[in-house]
Image: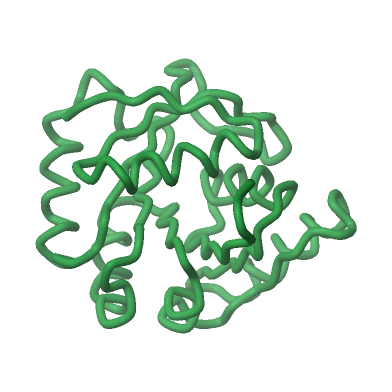
Length: 181
């Protein structure tokens, strides 16, 4: 059994919403951050309408969210991930950071660019354990907010971090398939 962990999701686009919907149904304290705080508040309210007893809250600042969190999920486009990495770098030392790929921007066949993006994040955050997750449905351009995502691809250079993220995903009914860079 997993101990209750705090997970911050930075970004409230399609991927952030889909991840938040899955994690809100689990035994996690979920923090939601977005550049526009009102987007984070709206998502929290939507999640609480679906899962009345979910443990979610909106955060105004990604730095504060990353400070509180055990695991950080960047659910934004890669350019924004680099920007956020610069903001949170002081508080993510030895933490797991999940880089969630936006639908339609990357597929498993394009691992070379993905690998270089992970390396770029790793250079910005040298003491952070970076894990990358991909949508396993190449036909899904945009996951619908309440769609049950059941499969993802997962990659990372730190085996323990990949295993930890895989266990979290499995605990909310998502089947991760490990791929190597």
